[in-house]
Length: 607
Picture (tube, rainbow, N blue to C red):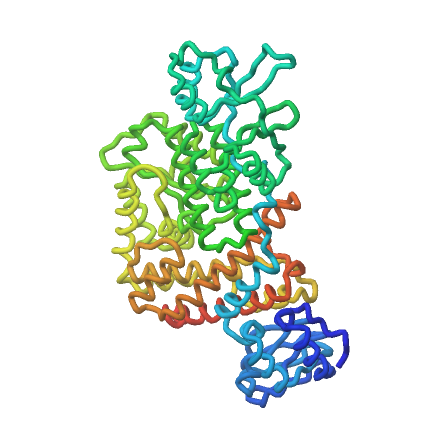
């Protein structure tokens, strides 16, 4: 066979050199004119196909299931079954490799990763791909730069200051160390005073108020630059047996980096951002904390952190950020008598990169909010915009009067959504069902959501109208052409429209019908399986499909940010690996099957 066969393609890159050589010797090249039926449904399958040039359309009856283009591998499952389940037609002139069934089956028996990537279902393919990711894609966090980490503020004191005053400052600033400037030396020297030095000073026996901090400070500082790598910082800390380094750019001191911070960053530095948020006393400090969240997402994603875990970390940090912001802006009495909540992907805990604000405020019955409530809410929305969360184009924010009400008025609004379910009402209801409390009395939100569930579970017509939004972005197969970037179609695939939204809203519809209180999609799937609404295998398949699509969307967004572009939500198909392209086709096929399940379950054909 031709030596040009590309063994870097998935799944052939999982083969050993000896296995590749055996397979190469058995491959043939075939040609089919446009319109030729390459393989008929039910026909014996004697080979595996890898396209060199041209496209093959996979059909079930008159429905197009998939389009396979150059370097795509197809009909792997039929190869194992021995017969094709679908009809394959050359949609244009086709040149392809044929890999004999006997040779491929022998390789499947020898190489489990090759077999899993070739013909398993999506879940098994994802497991096999995950097992290889550390060798092919993982970038160690030790290569991250110092300026990606959380730096502790560097508080400066004069070397003549007494120890008692120095310790009071450390307690006030919640600092474990302060920098000490000694102007008596020429040029002025910079040192550090730490809690360890304080212990030695106390044991000295002299009154702290009578000893200058200079006497107990260390002036041989270890400094690093913002551009240095975290792995090098860890080596310095170990080499010099110290607990912190000074981060400086020339003569400008930027902060302190402690051993705990380094280890936490290398493991999972989300809690450092949480500490920074909790300690913030002004909005400027929260701006700095908010800037660290995208960096954390990038670092953890590249280190192999699962998308589901990453999304939960982001949800927790955003909830802390919004809570602290609200506490700094709103009077304490308002915070105690109300509930600030987020909706949509933020509420579900499935937002990774920053998107539009979706939030609202509800206060308890009988409570009179302050007269300047509108101004307070405007300041909150403006603060979120400063953090990088743009205003919602649809005005779904606390700064808009319709989204701040008493619990009585809000309950009436929710009932109106249920009684008059036009498109706008159903959209509001959908994002409200995903709501998650971030500040104040969470029982106020829980009461409203339970009321919505109680009033809707017995209305089949309402539930069907609610669920039909799975087709909000159309049901055409046009994305297959975009997927293969054929014709004049753009190469960008909008994964939210084509895959993520139908999954999320379909599961939301099932959960609404079942009266579930869970808001996260995976949690809803688990609860639906526990109630017997769906099978455990369905829950697992749909959850893995969603998280794979979220991962692909996140990767595309991070690449856009690295190129200093705005996050578009589009996936550039030309930048996908062959493995990701194969998995994406499988995932979108799962979405199509899921939508068919929903149409039958909710009887959407009668609407």
